[in-house]
Image (cartoon, rainbow over all chains, first blue to last red; front, side, top):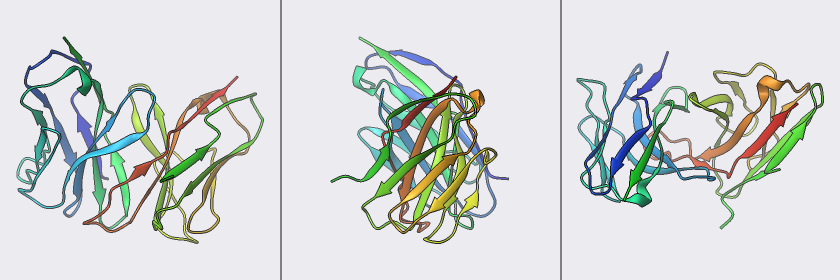
Length: 112
Length: 114
């Protein structure tokens, strides 16, 4: 079946450090891929997405590239801020089933 | 802009009690979802509805029922609550088109079963 695997957290960084959160997926066909972010006490909101191989999604300084050959969609940011502290979820949408499947989430804590 | 509205925000139930979590969206979306979020397990899909009048099981449907009352509303019912159903529940909706789907989430319902 379809699944998403994320690196375990928490990830603790100093402000302005480089961030990578790994995400790999298993899916039939060609899923769309997403990163969602959840700030404390809130629901999830879309951070970025990519709908086909080699697409790069980007938003708020975050980037992720859809790599079909490695079935990966790693999230990166060159310089994190304290305000980026949140839980990040990788997700896929399987076109044939019309449902979003999420990874377990990775908590990011950024310290001044 | 209301988006996705869930009620209630908090609820405490005794084991064996029943309740219905309500969800409504005002974005004319076809797809709606119910997830539960548990520490270390991320979001797990309980049920989803690809369109009005259809519902399908997700990963963890046992102990739950759903109703897609109309295009706007998708309710989740616990017939006999158990402590294992203590969780944060999220409703979401989306267009349902593979290329354009973004899921919009409600604020969540924190449910405790004692």
